[in-house]
Image 1 (tube, rainbow, N blue to C red):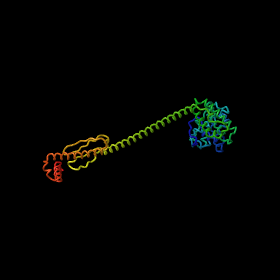
Image 2 (cartoon, one colour):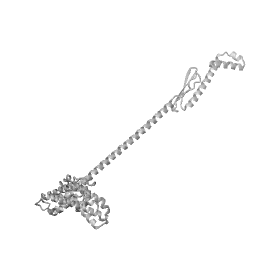
Image 3 (cartoon, rainbow, N blue to C red):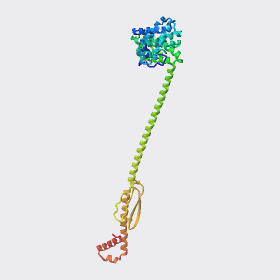
Image 4 (cartoon, one colour):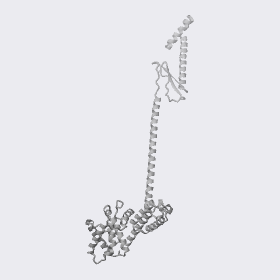
Length: 387
């Protein structure tokens, strides 16, 4: 009974029906069961002396045959097998046209209680007594309809012949009755609709794939309102999931782009910092060698100075500065400056020589030999020039 545990529904699902029908469908009374049956009849005769209990013999046998299967009532909720026993009793009462009398149901209840007492299980006397009752025609009719569909399904499953015409006919009958029941009961009986949907799913898995010759598809079964609503709900959930997935992908893409942008900005900042440090090192003043205390720097040009801008250079001679300006390469300016300096020295020597000649008495100069006269003049020149 582990496959049949829910006893609250009015109808058996297919698993419960598949388990109980082979046990309860065939009437068999063992010797031990017959003994308990007779003992129970004797007890209820005391209460129903005026009633013809002989006509209840078949009903007593049905109850005894079912209650012999003790394990069915122990391993699961007893309401499940008891509900099916009550259905079988109602079916027999209707066949005998005995279903209208409430007394008949009372007799059957009392027999169940006396049977349990005869077995020595009086504490279980209440089992199935509350389930023995008259079924309304509509309820009984729907049970009969559902259980017949179960029987048809079992017939198809047991028939191993592929594309058998009888199987195809039975399948067509199932589909027709299924669709009629969906149209008739989907607004009034959810429990029945649920059992029908479960059966349809079984047919889709177990029968249709192996019976292509019948040319029946799952689409031949009408969708119930419940299934349509469920499909819509699933479609909305799928739509929402896709929307959330798309949003998550967009956020992830934006995050990746932001990280890439930050990495790029970081690299650029590092490169700019390195460039700035390099420029600062290049802009530093080159060291100038000092020849003597009287000599000044000949030129000072920053490394990045435009070679075509004018270069200002200074020179110091005899305590006075001469400033020259030139255009072009710094090296050319230096050469030109040196040339100017050389020309200045020669000019000074020439001027000094002329001054000495003018200021020296010509008699001494002319009175000496030519060589001595030249030396005399040179000494005067060197003295003036401080050389």
